[in-house]
Amino acid sequence: MKNIRNFSIIAHIDHGKSTLADRLLEYTKTVGGKEMQNQVLDNMDLERERGITIKSHAIQMDYVQDGENYTLNLIDTPGHVDFSYEVSRSIAACEGCLLIVDATQGVQAQTISNLYLALDNDLEIIPVINKIDMESAHPDEVEDEIVELLGCAPEDIIRASAKTGEGIPEILQAIVERIPAPKGDPEAPLQALIFDSVFNPFRGIIVYFKVINGTIHKGDLVKFVNTGCEYDVDELGILKLNLEPKNQVSAGNVGYIISGIKNSTEVRVGDTITHTARPCEKAIAGFQEVKPMVFAGVYPIDPEDFENLRASLEKLQLNDAALTFSPESSVALGFGFRCGFLGLLHMEIVQERLSREFNMEVITTVPNVSYKVYDKKGEETEVHNPAGLPDPTLIEKIEEPYIHASIITLSEYMGPIITLCLGKRGVLTKQEYISGNRLELSFDIPLGEIVIDFYDKLKSISKGYASFDYYISSYRESKLIKLDILLNGQPVDALSSLTHVDNAVSLGRRMCEKLKELIPRQQYDIAIQAAIGAKIVARETVKQVRKDVTAKCYGGDVSRKRKLLEKQKAGKKRMKQIGSVQVPQKAFLAVLKLD
Image (cartoon, rainbow, N blue to C red):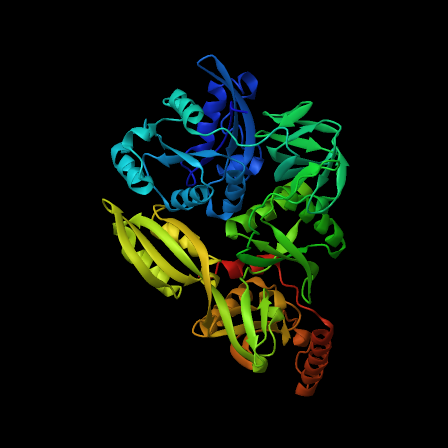
């Protein structure tokens, strides 16, 4: 055990984690020849296309130093704020981490956020300045920032270039010398932490775990503590680039187990594996429960696919524990699920994975956040969907979640960023210079204001130089009202939203104008209305498609024309009573991009 090292790589998005992982795998000859490609651990097509890491990937390397063989378990992690739950799980399975900082961009918001996650878990931190080969690199300034952030000595910081391979031997040496070996007793009762799982259509669910205490052998009868289910270990092994079977995995090591589990509800990330015959005294404290930030309805385009969608979401949840869902129904869209996501990018990725991996085409409604509603009796209910809001006469007050946002940017973009945040009902709480012309702005902003387009706007006004990170701070009372969209007097619950009283009328007007462009014309007029309670605040009309029924009347008495027009009018009226207006998927997406 003294020769095992478990470490993860953490950094802000795009600071070169995956490329550094490539060089480490190449240097230790874990991957070579045909298998070697850029971002070798990013095995999802989606990750390669977008150039981001979505999943944590574990891989084992063999390394020799001073004649001794060492086993290094590397867990590569995502850098985007929407996947921070993945990072927290990888950190829980490690004793140390490499903190990567880009020499051209310096310390950014997610660097600090991930660093605090690592410090909370008492990990040994090895700071690395990456991309020093680039012309725009300023490693000396970045070194000062890291020293200020970590309080370490400048000589502890390793300068490297993942592209050219410079500094890689020093990094491996530091991993062996600075990161402590895992503590645990191979002879104690088995205690293993599940940190990930994946569904395989031929072999069932493959569970990834880290052994804290004890040893697990092939053929053992094991028990999952939280669910109480028991399984035979059919196959056991370690994680190289592919799964590599072994006869046993002991304390301190990371491995996988296959036992033909078919039901996805039986495996929970954060659960403990132990032996049935000699169980451990207590389960390992798992991860904190994930708190979804953004809620949206996900509905199958064909109502008959409801059960297929449920199965697809369950399989996806195995591999993405931050996704939560519960069934709901909508008048406009039929049966579907109310899903919780960590952010808008997370929502987009889930939608894309449903389409690619499970061939599920879905409609996603307008995203919103959860609110606390207090009625006149003082009872509290949590509302995720505006349609679930009680009658306005019964509501005493509504509280909405506020976030504490930290934005790191260059001083020249300070003005537009403050204007953007104040426009989103934000309050500036702190403003301080980090180094040179870089400063950190702290805001308290309602989460509902940032879930739709805040991040995109922030990136465009700062030309990509602002980094953004946030955490939920509290719930505060706000003047919120429900804005309904009516089509021919019928409310479309999938388009209703909770909004601040000051924004309601302008939002209603913009939504009506947008829907007028997108809803196709029918044989009768369609009235699109925005309503707050019983009060209509905006209206647009999609004009009917008309046939000129009086074309065949030339000359003669006017009553002949009138008779034909009355007949047409009666037909239109009858059509309007039985006709229903279909809202295209484009309309739901367009409402998100209202400017």
